[in-house]
Amino acid sequence: MSKTSYYYFSEQPYTGYDPALQEQHPSLRLTLPNTHFDPELASELYSRYHDEYVVADEVGFDGIMINEHHTAPFCMQASINVTGAILAKITKRAKILMLGNPLPVVDNPLRLSEELAMIDMISGGRLISGFVRGGGVESLANNVNPVHNRERFEEAHDMIMAAWTRPGPFSWEGKHFQYRVVNPWALPLQKPHPPVMVPGTVSPETVVWAAKHRYPYVVLGSSLDQTKELIELYRETAAQEGYEMGPEHIGYLIRTFVADTEEKAQAEGRNFFWQNGALNKQIREWMAPPGYASLDFAGIRKTRAVSKDFDSQAYQEAQDNYQLVLGTPETVTEKLRYIRDTLGLGHMCLWSMDGHMTHEDTVRCIELMGREVLPALREA
Image 1 (tube, one colour):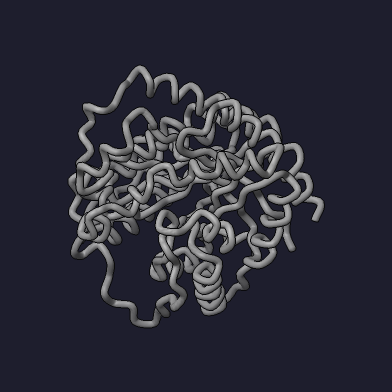
Image 2 (cartoon, rainbow, N blue to C red; image 1 turned 90 degrees about the horizontal axis):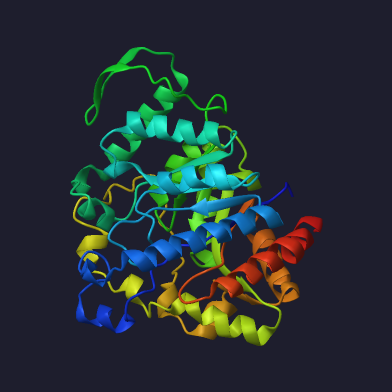
């Protein structure tokens, strides 16, 4: 199979509140009062997480994956572009994989095109610009009508691609965005534009859209069976579009922790459950507001496999179904190789820090992966 790329990922969680507090509110998102946020602690955490990114760059990860959420204690990255700009300067070789900018909540895609172009230039052409629709709660947090989510996503994407590739000046008259003059002076270093990836969970519509644009689709931690169905849908769409899907078109995000002993890995792995189901304790209408998802699935096969929410699984169950990989370098290498080869992956995003894992344990995990796990995977 073709070369697989490996990316380090962390949500950059804020852990400075009592988890019992979330039981007093209907959702971890939107309603947990920000009076429980301590900027001094957050400042220390940001510095720590950035130091860990540097280690991932130094030990040989192909890239660093970053994301963006709003009103989300489990993720302090309110702006993926701020983190991307920091990575452009503090790292030297790793790709900067953004998964991704939530286009439906962006009011000025032209400015976004300029910011991403700056990151690409400052990093020396290391940007991979991912675009996402974002969950329904992102629209609510940013006061954007969820009914327009998909069409805002598609128009913002088209506008950014035009700004990157179409000589200016020109005008843009769309439904949601209008510009009398489009003539950005900041243009990407990579030509014709930075690579684009699209992440998602189980949305068949997004899989089809990504396949039609020949963008790699990165499955965010669904079960292997469900992921296989999404991959098959991509393969079918690619064939209809006149090309053959390859490993370079498919990625997968998986929680992974490596330690010197199995006992240490098992102890630290429980941090992936630190929120005790809080991610799933969200009002349904907030995650998928009326109008957010299309009812027209004509020509699009719905996935039949059922994927249990990660936080609703037992600890061993999550490991048995390969949604959680823990152990020594040898154990983790074997399991990741199985997942990679079973799914035919060209991109593997390794979520390797969460909850109350210490900086020292996280750095050791990154070092073991970079120096032992990744070389073994690449040899295979």
